[in-house]
Image (cartoon, rainbow, N blue to C red; front, top):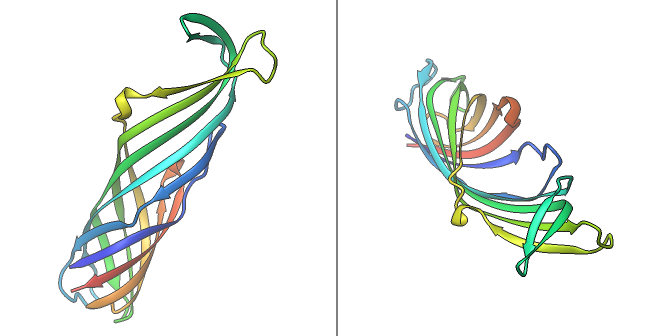
Length: 196
């Protein structure tokens, strides 16, 4: 049996002109199943984790023309700034992992991690720059996206390798896990585990 908390040490940064203002992740709680005290032989382990995370980001100077309604009248705009916030529940499962205990204090493993991010809340606030107005004339409008929930789901599979140091047969250990996510980036997770 295994239980742990994962903390993200490194994550991908902004892309496509987006500036990440806040990117907060809560502690991840999980459980895993493996044979009791497998000593040196290779063995299989499965894991399941859950956490929540949120992100606030901005995209400034989106060059797109359009119209916005203000007090019943329509005004043209030449560009806008976009500020958005999202909240997610993240579920992760490791359906297959091969582990090997080098000795009673060090173990190594490799496997695949499947994850799904479920969007539970989203909001957007746009600042529009009006046509023909002075450069500093702007109109700010909050937009509610799908009544506060966008319902987006993001699924991915990431291969990983990791190492545990501590009492790897039974007891507490610290782990370091490197995940490769392709276009989603690379991650390095630090976690604590207790095998009992």
